[in-house]
Image (cartoon, rainbow, N blue to C red):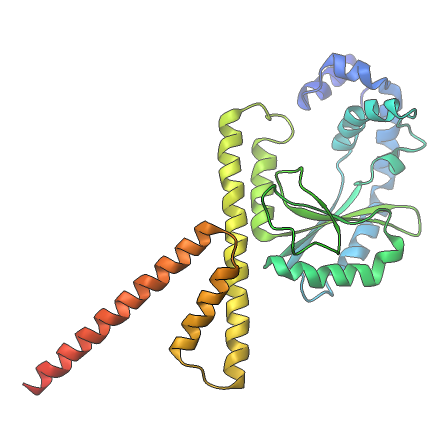
Length: 297
């Protein structure tokens, strides 16, 4: 893959890696070429493995949808170049012999949820089936300022990333790592846009960063609203199954739920909608009353 100087230069340019960064990695093109060829030979086996896991996860009723992939060879080589300096500082190095141990996302599965709280069911499913095969403690990336209540006591919480996602690393009986990420549809949408526009090559553009940050907050707010509505409907249906409830009870329930909501913007939005709804109902009653009076004249 990297036999000529031109091929090597094109690769570095494609992934925005400077000659200095490459030298600091202490890797040779000959070693990288061997790794690339070896990985190409194992791709069919990896595809078979990841399909097997995907079929298992699809049995979980809380999974809305999922996707899976085997890492592209070029992206593997790029990651090895970027990460090897870190391994050198630790007294080791990435090589043909150990690259599949050092790069643990060669196989990836992404589980998507409709509502954020659906993660609890997925987490239980994963732990019941694969807890003994986890290579590390599961952890949740949450955006600084997000509520950690959903994850507390279940997984380690990390507040250093702009995106939201829960990570599991399963080590197969054959020694193959399977990285599993769990996130909502809104989180996935933002992440895909962020990856396309910024990560990992355009991090310095302040305007893009600012707009992506706004979009990130909007995605989080959309998840909060979805959770609120889903919780309201479930509890309302439960109350209805126990007996008819009147409109005052419905409003009281909504107001109590609003008090539990931590996002002030969502609170204001819901309160305004309730207020407008009440005004509309009062106007409708007055209109109906006038209509009835007119009929009797």
